[in-house]
Length: 108
Image (cartoon, rainbow, N blue to C red):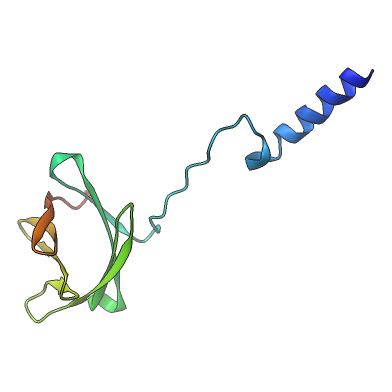
């Protein structure tokens, strides 16, 4: 009888989601639903959230996020990183190194 109660308790806990020790890690996306996810060369992705009526963007990378402000030339920068979403494709440069290039906006 004690074994039956233990099995019943474990089955009840299975419905408790993240507590269940055998379910594995739950992967959650940090990318907001209003972000644009560009597909770039070398299989990379670049998530960008356009804010303030296009006056700034939030770049969302797996390891961090940062804000860039629009310049007169249509690019976005914070003095360290630059993002350009021109007609030829988007790119991201950080500390003078182009980290994402040939990025295409997904089809609507």
